[in-house]
Amino acid sequence: MSGRILVIDDVATNRDLLRAKLGTAYYDVLVAENEDEALELARRQQPSIVLIDVMMQTIDGFAVCKTLKADPATAQIPVVMVTAIDDPEDRTRGLDAGADDFLVKPISDLALFARVRNLMRMGFAIEELQLRSEAAQELGLTTNFAPTEPTPAQSVLIAAPDEATGARWGEALHERLSVGASWETESRAIEAAIAQDVPDAIVVHQQLGDGRDGLKLLADIARAMATRHCALLFVVDDDDMRTAAKALDLGAWDYLMAPYDPFELAVRMRSQLRRKIYSDKLRTDVQDGLRMATRDPLTGLYNRRYAQHQLRIMMERAREEAADFALMILDLDFFKQINDVHGHDAGDEVLAQIARRLQENVRGVDLAVRLGGEEFCLALPGTSQDDAREAAERIRRAVCGEMFLMRDGTQIECTVSIGIAVAPAGEGDVDSLLRSADRALYRSKADGRDRVSTAWDSCEKA
Ligand code: GH3
Ligand code: MG
Image (cartoon, rainbow, N blue to C red; front, side, top):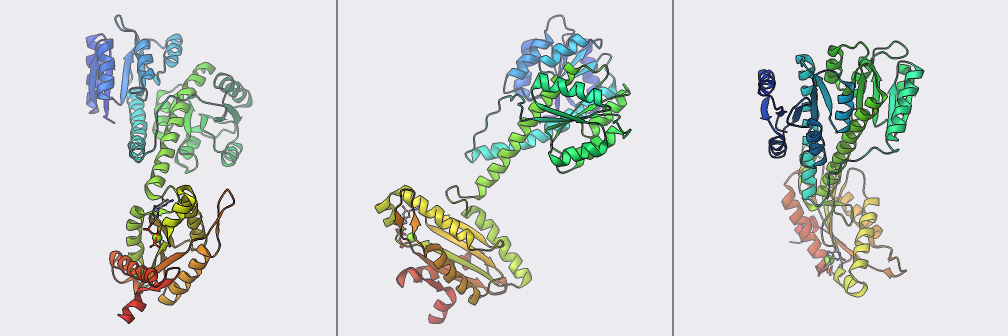
């Protein structure tokens, strides 16, 4: 997010006025005096907000808005249209072109700065998610942003001043956006509805049916864990720009002022729902990315990279608590033959089933890792040498005691060799513990496989 604002206006004095006004709040202002310049600057400079005057001689502001919204490179940049008079027709056209808001000339500082602050804040949040999602994409996830239309799966809850208004707005949203819309007028019922099923968007009227302050409800919703990602639209009752500004600062994504036009409500809701769908998608990508970065896709176990980091943390904790820390390395026996005889896919299936058996046989505090190939590692905090040996024997039997059943009915037998090392009271470092376990494993292999060896027994022998 650049923190830059692009002002598009073909009149020099207007541009200068806005530049000066925004400059006082230390925003970085870009200006464009024709259409080409505007599109070029928007693409290249990625401003945080675009301000377009709709009353221009040489530029069609609506067309510019439409072009910006149709181009994936600029579609996410919020567009605010500046109108000379509060012309409902201009608003409708602008909203249809994808504009995110309107400012009426002469622009009040309150309205301008409240809107800019709000859009900047939301932009920063989305940008943060985008960056993390890009990191996820580098790990192999594909995400392409395409503006998504709301579907019946989206739900909107209206916190209405009365039944009739709730019904009218609900109908407008349902008909125009085909989303599921419901309404409530009493705070209790509103809270109960949210608790039962968190909606994608909530419309909050300034004055609720039971006289409760809508701004208070808005603030609660914006803060609560369960609802903080809901799109929030505030309906200003007292026709006061200060109330609208306050709503934006409290967390409203957008607001609506009288005269209430159900069409305007629907169009504003559409763009907020799009934003919501987009940010939800980014958030899921980030979660998937994190999962991908830490897990092995075939088995779902943690991967080596994550283990290296996590083992260190676990061992530090063991040292702090002076608790024994056991580490096991498991390597499947003659696994190459399984591939050779039954095919690579069957080998994969055996690996996946082994991982499942491993997970079923460890505690929640243990860490199960696929180190690579047919090699696994288990970290068992708070486990003494005796306990570790016992656990290893149990795991060896649990993992390979039964044959592996393939989808075609084939039964495959596979055994495992295990090496264990224990850091008494968590002393020592992860790398040497891993090396000790590895040496013990090597002994299991050398002694005939399908067995458990311990690092301390080999020390005693040596
Ligand atoms: P040893 O008892 O000495 O460990 O013998 P081994 O055959 O298990 O060991 P080796 O290192 O010779 O071979 C390991 C085999 O594991 C070779 C490799 O193709 C196979 N392998 C590694 N990763 C995968 C995988 O993800 N899927 C499948 N199907 N096979 C894998
Ligand atoms: Mg092996």
